[in-house]
Image (cartoon, rainbow, N blue to C red; front, side, top):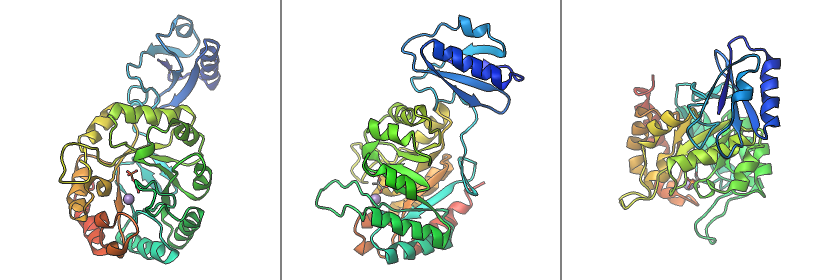
Length: 331
Ligand code: PEP
Ligand code: MN
């Protein structure tokens, strides 16, 4: 339930409503809006008796939120969430481009690719230091050494850093080095990791599992938000279907569906969806055209020798081409 405050409600009245909600055994989360503040009630199992709240000073009305996710729902917050990191605004109307290798392999590799993507106009550098690999025998990432390289990339290029935390043992160190903490598709329903990300001081990029519905993705985002971190962006990276022409099937219809259901920004990762580099440019254009708030793209200066996901990594000139091609689609 949403307790909508009057336009001229005071901070003390909002706090009194939150206190009353706590007395009722729930939690009240203030959601400041352009016109007025609403307080979202979370933690209730069934219907809430709003009679005591409706008579309080400053309360305009109550609205029942019909969706199982509350804080991330469009019903709760009609205006889009804009995540501002420095000068970059994610969800602010202009797509944000995040690009880089699948994994950080060495300082030279990371800096080479970072300079390339920066020159073509990327704002965020991607690259995993902790890699969730299907095979335990595959390259698992450089760990903290990789994070230190990412720190150097940020200092040398000014690019923001998005990198993955794969479990509760590394999220703390990832939080120290990253500007955006990535939670991968395989971890979308790792609820203890989601809860820990809810206490992080950095925004979170939450990737949709290849087997998750949109409602499940939004419930996972709700885990993070309900712990206090409302800076969550979602990522569509392809789902498993019977189509076997690509590694996964990019669900572009997820973008308008998510926009309808939630106020959170949504990023598209065409690389893990396609699994092949020749489809990355057309899928990126499709993603921007349907309203994605950004792209997460794998780029490598030497894809045949990449330690992971070389097949789907763009060559530098292809990334330049992608940036040119999407220009006409960006308002
Ligand atoms: C990645 O972005 O490198 C990655 C592992 O992606 P996903 O979790 O979508 O498979
Ligand atoms: Mn990858």
